[in-house]
Length: 361
Length: 71
Image (cartoon, rainbow over all chains, first blue to last red; front, side):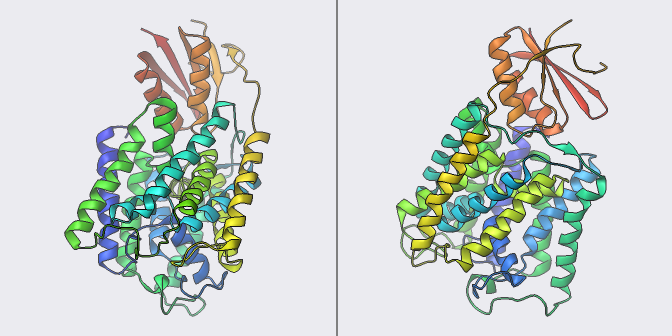
């Protein structure tokens, strides 16, 4: 763990497997997209009304279980929570609204660029700008306060929920609703998607791969560790897309994307701003949730509810472009995140002299 | 040796690293940082090592004490 080589390999694997999933049925440039797949899963459970984006995505289940098994095996599984839960829920909700304005989470943003979708450039610039904005708050002492140890069983609940979802999916249960057309109807075989999820989840649990963390650490600490993974995803997906013939350079007619540069920028800026205050991108939240981090589980629930609202209230963009409701929601989102940022600044930090705290060397 | 201690237990990243950074600007000779998760340990180790400090880690149950010293 911790070596730059392993996170680069991790990134290469994520990039290649994403292209592989497209090859076997996932929508183009959507081998893995945490935001889209949470949204699809929410739809598959019947919690929103957008008929074209409903499917319980095994990739998400796999990532959760992969991270769970790996952290458990490595004795890093810790049930913890209690760090501003409702604030995290709201931030998760808003990150989803931003991601669905752009049409993709930070991971899909990189995959889109690697597929030649130049609209993602506006997304990346926005994403970096949003992270920069969040860093201003971090530097002023923003904190969601500490987390606490919880009963071990608490940490098992989220993985168990995912196992239940998997059983429903594999058994072909009639309670789940799947799209007959549109992106939700396009998916790789369950087993393949699940195995890819397990590999990605297990590996990223070791390396702490995070899209937000990459840009954040580079700006804050001049640390290239996390962003090397980010760049490796891009390189591998680019080569994979070219090899399989998915690469198509341009702005117009890109799959599950729109060409409104300003709102692509603002959508990802909001996602970056919210994510940096949460301490990690949507994918990282999924990994942490598998490790027993209840704060991340709450964040994911916020994203799930955000996804449902985004479609029920017509906030999510489509290939035709952003909606008026979506634009209003993104603007409100910026205001809310800024207020959360402002009101959670801790003005004084204590440095104690050793001896004040019980620690045995 | 007595050193200034940053208690970053329960904080999630990047906060422990930011607190360490802040502390090191005040106490350039080094600080001790107390954390309780491995991600924070690795991040602080990497951060301090990149700045040219010597890092020593002691673990006591869930608590991890990171001693950061000037070489």
